[in-house]
Image 1 (cartoon, rainbow, N blue to C red):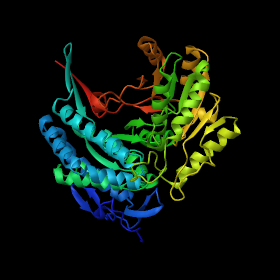
Image 2: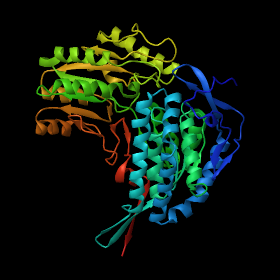
Image 3: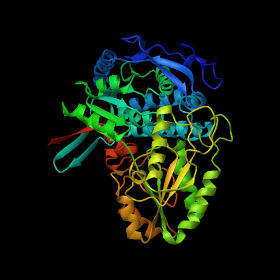
Length: 484
């Protein structure tokens, strides 16, 4: 294998990883196939990890099963101390993590540092406290209701937030007393290896956390359908989430699914339009639009529609595409050539459906190397059109006019998804009233900040269950009633 010249941003020891982490040790894989890791900013090959097999999954699940009784019986304070040591070891690698995410995902270094790494460290720190004081028992009449760890968890995570999506599963599962087998995305596996270097340093008991990299078709299928996996926690596309449910259904295993979104950003006529547009564009383009909660539908009152379009075009023009390590870069590449083709297909379909191009488009200039798509905005998007209904997962914003609040709510709820959304108004009570009517798992009012202790998840085809905070922790628990 010919790797590109070692980028100074990527730890050299991370480039070739030949082992998996099973039963507390770095072990050789059962097979000989490997997964190449690409830098989407350049197209260069920058790393390689083993491609796991069903036999590797069997070994990892067996290790997790053997470790479960001891870990489940560990006192909450001791589990908390283990998570605290993991936090310390992971925080010491923050710079390496940010650089690795910038290389294998293409996220601008500032975003990789402030969001991709800082948020999962916060989530892990929150679970240090939650593990010490878990909501495990309550009395209801003559019943003692207890929560017990569900067992072995199969965690299958995506590429777009390669540390946060892992931590949103590992931290609560461990805090609850579960053991875990992790399959990270085959597009961004190097971040998981840095995490497991920290796991080794922190000294977690053998088998509590296990790592099996590989493809979804092999490792993902084997893990989701494994008879000794008690709960499958999956983040990714709705199509794949349905497949996970099918595999788990054969044994009536529990699933937790965080899936797609097509979130609406409702800007009421009395809102601070300049701020709403600026924040709304930033949210839609976050991580080059590769964010499940992105506000990809901007709903604007018809009286302020033309003004909003001018503000949007100006805002989008300030998003410079380029090298993730260039401080002036605001948008990195998409993760792969396949993702570029997917997004281009959505843009072509929007044009064919009669949407009006306001900014960007397929002919807009992009860097010569790498998997780039210019930030693109369409106006006059019909609420029933593909662009308004389908998740693009790229830097594409649909702008839709409305005439009154009832119509805005109807358009916002006209989706098979229900993950997130936003409302803007000078009247907090009016904004709250609209937020209550939106059929989504989360709504931000006037740009309120993300709360990593609040439950995260969606309605409808955006998933099942919740992540983060105490609600996320209880997803990894069974309930038992003991009558006395």
